[in-house]
Amino acid sequence: MSEWKNALLLAGDALLYFTILAGLFRCRHRLGIGSFFCALGVMHFLETYLASIFYVALPFGIVTSPGSTVLFTGKLMLLLLVYIREDAVVVRQPIYGLLIGNLLMIGLAYAMRNHDLVSLAPGRVADFGFLGEMGALMLWGTAILFIDAILIILLYEKSRALLGGQVFLRLGLAGAAVLTFDQFAFFAGLHVLTGAGLPVLIGGWAAKMAAVSLYTILAGVYLCWFERSAKRAHDAPRISDVFDILTYRERYEDLLARSGRDALTGAFDRGHLESHGRRMIGEADEFGRPASLLLIDIDHFKGYNDRFGHAAGDAVLKRIAASIMGSVRASDCVFRFGGDEFVVVCEALGSEAALALGERIRREIASRSDIATTRVTVSVGVASIPDDARTYDLLFAEADARLYQAKAAGRNCVIGSRAVSAENPVRLAFAG
Image (cartoon, rainbow, N blue to C red; front, side, top):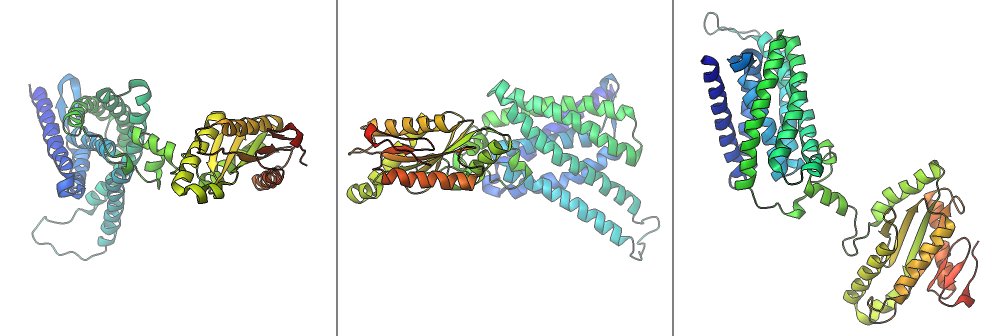
């Protein structure tokens, strides 16, 4: 009978814990999220203390501690909730704070051993052994929490491919998998420091799975009923540490798709060319694969801007970028290099195929009547590895030189290592 009483009490503890902390989180825009983090951090010591010495018996022979079952499991699920409704930049703050705070506690406890103590009453003496043990266990638990937080975010996001918008199932799957890992990892430290036996491992795992089920229901209800409004897209997380790098949720995937893109045209920007484009060429040369670089310039674009204005010029840039991106393969990357210049980097594309691609882009743009109020054309310089160069810089220089040849040849043409193609076959020429 006492076992069922303990189970009901643990469920009540979990409900109280989640209700208060979720309520603070819900009020974050009014009180500040610091109030939520402070409450979460205050419970950290109690959580570790209970996990080290306070255990209760549950039905079916389960032995567990409220510290790990209620407090730690709840904390991890609440951190996932923070991530879902905020971002990786926010969720990492309490984890780093706890980690640094625990390190500080161990350091200060070690330093305070050297004090000469005064006893206020018989038997009331500081237990530095207990303090050191708690500090070590808290530090171990926080280190595991760091890994747990990364894993639960990854699993929650990766499960979207299988489960879509089924929030309850995604929360439960991520929580159960990560807390299984956590139970084994935390038990290892607990066993070394306190001598805990196998029943603690098994009972703690079973109790955590039950707690995950309860917290999944609570978190799912909270998300569906209290935080239904979508977060603004422009509040996406910054990329600065492991939490951001390993973030894969819906909003973050959208950020990844848009990061490094030119705001006007949607093509990748020049910075992305210097990193990703350069890497594409380097890897192609390293593994002996062909690759090509096309440098595209809009003919007489400055004159068009002067005549019709920059707003009309921006519209032309958007339409030409869309035309280029619609002409290339899915694996090719289009970059806006300058005001009216674009670069296309193509993996596994030799010189002849690159010339054909350049000609297809040129024809597509020249044949469209919806790009501008007057006819717009482009000139293209093409260079390929290994035929023309073996490095990104030399390849770009070669494509640039051929672009100037295309302009000198009368514009509206493509020059590569073999030929120039233009609307007038008489103007065909050879480069290199």
